Each structure stands twice: as C-alpha cells, then as structure tokens.
Image (cartoon, rainbow, N blue to C red; front, side, top):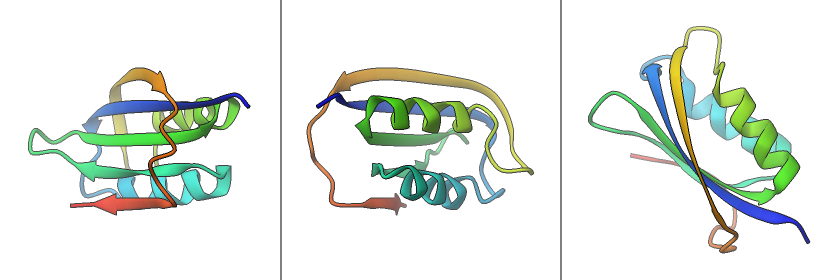
Length: 92
C-alpha cells in the first residue's frame, strides 16, 4: 500500500470559476477522497487522500485547474495517510 495525503493551497483566480467542483470531479475520477473549499483570502484549499500516483496526478491538475482559472501558485504539504474520508466533498 502506497497511500498518502496531501494538503494544498491554490492561489490565483480560483474562486468563481468552478474550481472546487472541477477538483471534485478530478478527485472522483482518480479514486481519491478528501475535500476542497474556498478560503477567505481568495485561495482554494484542498485535501487529497489515496494512492501516491493518483494524488500526484491531482496536484498536477490543480496547477492548471479548469479553463477559466488562472493558477499562480500551489503549495503542497505531503502528510501520512489518515484514511479520514469516505468520499470527496466540497466544503463551505
């Protein structure tokens, strides 16, 4: 088992462009669990849990985001897998 957890802070034009919903769709497609939410500072925060390769693919997707997004920075904090979530959700 090579499962990991990554917490991300995505900055740029990432709110109001379907970033969270697109992140959820990407995570579900990759078989990941976790969540995404908007932060008061205009960034998006996301947590992914799952196979290392799939989490890596999700992080790479986050660097681009959906078509209307303009990502300027993605901070990644790799952590130990916690098996904390049953699915991937959007938090408010």
